[in-house]
Image (cartoon, rainbow, N blue to C red; front, side):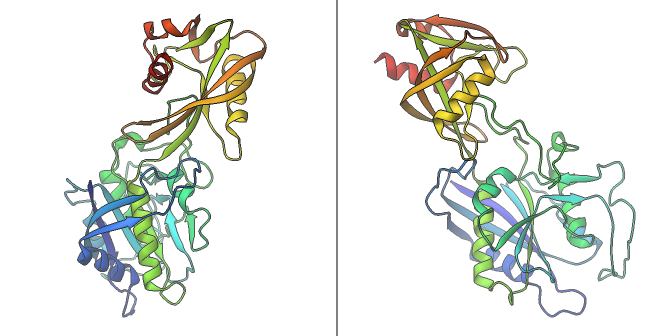
Length: 364
């Protein structure tokens, strides 16, 4: 499958002869179809599930004025899978992934048309800031350890920030506006509370991201182009969510739990479990999740099977473990019912997809 991506850069400004954002945008646009490889998977939570992407790049070079800042906001983006703005950070030494855009003018000097806006909102009746619609969880999983890349919640007060905000306001899913945020500007999500859930985000929203580039004196042109291509690939990829589920056995029966009303996929039955946190073993994650959900202590015995389940916006990588109760009886918090059933009767219930595939495996 080929993804179609629009990349923009800016013309030189303030008397400069070059702007690396325009140079790299042109390189992508003239290169046509590009194969981008991310290297082998490391197993880290939220990493990109697809490790190789075929991308068809197109480019536009924007003027450093109101027309340039508004061009992509006014454009027809039908058929594009992502919008990537590139800009110059003349005083930067690393590639900056911008997590948000501020609804605020803070020009320190006039743009190329002579416009000087030092205060006030970019757009009336809009939030103070808008978060990128790209998955920061996935980008952080791939680039947090890269010394050439940093994450920023300050896209500046000039045309870069203005273009970013106008593009987000015009094309991002309106459901994403006004999300609460952490201090770093990334969205606060519940993440994955149980097996087969996933990242809560702007499902269906086109990924929109701004990347600030240093001059080639700090990081060479080719290295920057390669990293930008990888960032674009990660932006397009589904995150892989590592979760665990418990097949809790007692006296020949297996514990089955039904999701309560108000929960995602309410009414479906599941083997309880949840997301593996950073630094946790699967056994520790399973013990923690089961105690949080059912107020019981368990002893994980052995892993049974790993299932990879594709959803529209993520890939669930779930490992099921046999387990036994050490202390307690189930107390329901996120479920409204539980049953103890023998293996041969499990198929009588309406199960989540990944859990159903495990049952089919166990019964045959």
